Length: 500
Image (cartoon, rainbow, N blue to C red; front, top):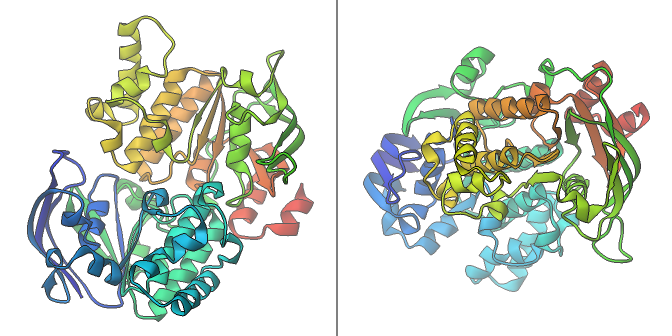
């Protein structure tokens, strides 16, 4: 049993968000708990209390009691907590210690000094239950974001803890992989494990949650049973800053232009090895300019690699892009494009948020650049963060800073890889509004996403990639909506291929 008695916590960094105030919560053995609320409400901080990262790793002022089976958690050595509580972080890269998948899955077992036969048994059981056989003995650096998340879940599962704590586990997962995650959670529930999940995506988890804890400003604002929560209207959920319970059947809000100019992709090919299999194979593709093109497909289909080739970030990429009467090879495309990566930690460089945006600007008028940067940050709800170090921000805030840098770059082609992962409803809408402003400025936007709410909010064109090839692409019309909903409802395969 987990008990939090009048718990308050303030980070030593002095940040005002993500702190906790007078938390009282009792979690029974075998319960599945969903923590939800706007970004910065304290969900992640609460998970860090339960898995012992506070106070063992994150410093600050902690008052009250956090109890595990009646004993204060702070009195447990961290290694003992690790055997009782398995953790999956929002960014799986931050919890990896190895370079290959198999070693990572059994890493916790090795730390527990389990016999080799037992480790092999657990590896086999975990790989089977999480459907990971195809990911074994792979380089972690060659995996997609969703595949990395699956490995993080597997490393927690192999320890066989009593409690699982997951922070935004679905943020980088496609619909199919979320179904696998649901299967894992159901498996844990059948074994009477305690499962605590902090999430913005609600639809997949609410049917399995015993209780839903809604947090606001560091406090537990409301508590719902599953049945009570499912009765909340879409308008009520939006007012609470929460995502939809049925995001797959929303009406599209954006309309494509009648006859936009086009950009032409020719002979796009890429392979990591000279004679290895093609990771991108697009011989000929014509797409509209000045639109928001949603790129969909399962994890590992080649979406992010295609985006990197489009931006010229992979120098070995072959092929040309024709735009406005000019032809651009990979090296030249770097000058007309900007990409917000799935892991934005790779592209945050400066000492404060304002300088991060100024770094992307080419203008020589410092006053004008600063005014524009401040306007961008205000539109992304980051005005209060301008003097903070980017790496001190939450995952969702970092994502918005990177988006702000893309806007500030003023490039012709802007590519966003999962720009709303880890964002609540309000901030998803803010991102959507900014993408629409860029479209209205004539920019061509490519949006890699597994977020149906974002697609219906702003995408005017769809591009479906499977096994490194484009299977179909079309404007967001009735046929595209039909194909999109088929994809999200798993009626993929031959039906989608034939429809193209």
